[in-house]
Length: 208
Image 1 (tube, rainbow, N blue to C red):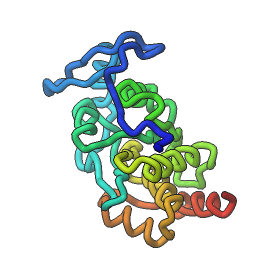
Image 2 (cartoon, helix red, strand yellow):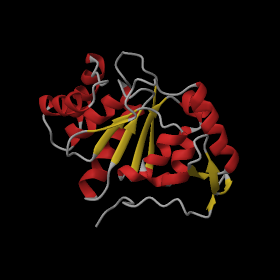
Image 3 (cartoon, helix red, strand yellow):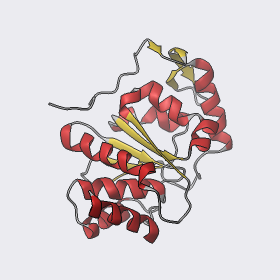
Image 4 (cartoon, one colour):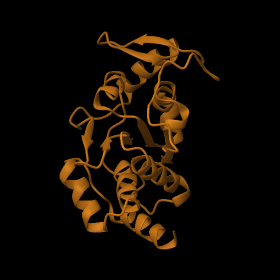
């Protein structure tokens, strides 16, 4: 039996702390679930501070049911369900998610239990395991325990931080370092596994 919620459900009625859920309209006419003001705020903020137009919004890692991508805008957030996404790992720093409102919208749509935050800046240096290890384990457990689950891991551009967590999740799932790197880099053109980030994961695995 799955220990994680395999099906996300936006019809949650009342979301504690944010008020009653309603449907918000984005600038392209699509709709997303969330508090009306929060949906509008997320739509505006991701126009000002969103992903690069040249970055693919989502890339599936072959048949692993893990996708790596950029911060969802109002349009791409609405498309996640059509892609079959059930869980999300958000790898953006706390200040970033507060400014953009993406984490709050993800939790409103997919449920708090189905969204994990791995707050990191893209420093290029070794990353503290307290910031990302639980999220990587969460993603791996969801994939292993729920055969219909699909996990979307994102940062700002889907280039570095999401790659770190995706690499860690694949390693936890039993892939070798070479296999995990190959799967990610062949699946997403923007992906780059920085050596310090790879070392962070490999060192952590030695202590698990």
